Image 1 (spheres, rainbow, N blue to C red):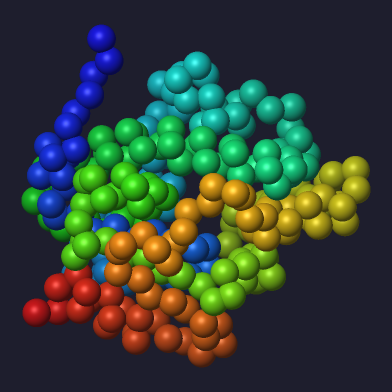
Image 2 (cartoon, rainbow, N blue to C red; image 1 turned 90 degrees about the horizontal axis):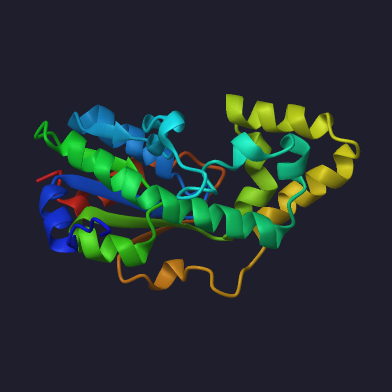
Length: 224
């Protein structure tokens, strides 16, 4: 017998949870941090599923999440084709859903509001959240992440570049890495057509975070 929790039960327990999803480089992480700071919300960053101990993952039940434990090295991962990388990230997202939802139910017991920089796909969010507690952030152009990925000065980006430089053909590996963000899978999410509130970022020069924060705060009904 497989344990299953009905979506209406999950939705009840997640009634104080606010979700932000969408394109890479749209400002999701920045907004989530601002909401946590200004409204005293619990912050669940992009990889909050990492709170689940890796030792408890199953290579049979969560093979994509266990990939880094089974790969031959970083060069193997960095040289995945765009199709292979998309399928791996898709599988990771699906495997993370039950971990992330369970973590959110646990955190919700505190009674505090929670802001989530999430990868839970829109079809699942429609089941466990609602319009007023979900926002989709988009980029125009949507492939801006491929052009500016390494502009961000954080440890993950530094580590990736270090590993790329260690590959047999760094230039080819970097080109392949950048091609992941440009790949358009046939079954990709139509982010503009999810049915949720959406905000599009097109200015990547000016600092528009206060403007965006005000728009999202109004949508979430937090500035009343």
